[in-house]
Image 1 (tube, rainbow, N blue to C red):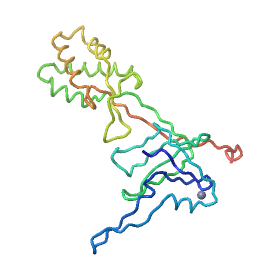
Image 2 (image 1 turned 90 degrees about the vertical axis):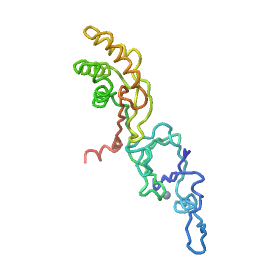
Image 3 (image 1 turned 135 degrees about the vertical axis):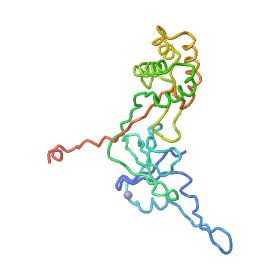
Length: 239
Ligand SMILES: [Zn+2]
């Protein structure tokens, strides 16, 4: 796994360091049917281009990478922090095309990210309730159940919940499971007027729908933005 980048402090360019820089490029030749090896050394090229400049290694800070889009898309842009031990920089990685090497840029600014408020998957929850319990639980009670889930979820924070996985289609979305105490709170909100047998069905429904992105799990949509670097020169700010 990539953890280190080479930075030119004069040009603010970056190169990811690793054995992939010395992997040969291949060119298919039709006749004879064999591949030709093309010597290719990005690190040597980088050091040549930046000869005489101030170079230094920066290490990627684990757990800081964030970006929109689908996990499987190699062309999506991601941002992460890297440090040389003294200074922390923000790096943006992107690829113009799937068959081109990734480009790393230093971005002036700081990454600000948050876990986001837990959301009930209300529409999917209603649909699943209709499908599983439509003929066993009256519509008014199903509606009150969804309202109770939303009330309980409104008092929860991402940190209180058990994270049960990421969304493969959206790197900013994760799912979290309600605790046993939360499930009891939901049923307690209905207990005064709902028959015991229906409460038991709703309890079983909750237990059967709490894996991965199942409808009883809450959606956590992480947010992030780049806070632009503060202007250091007060004269420039006034201008
Ligand atoms: Zn340079």
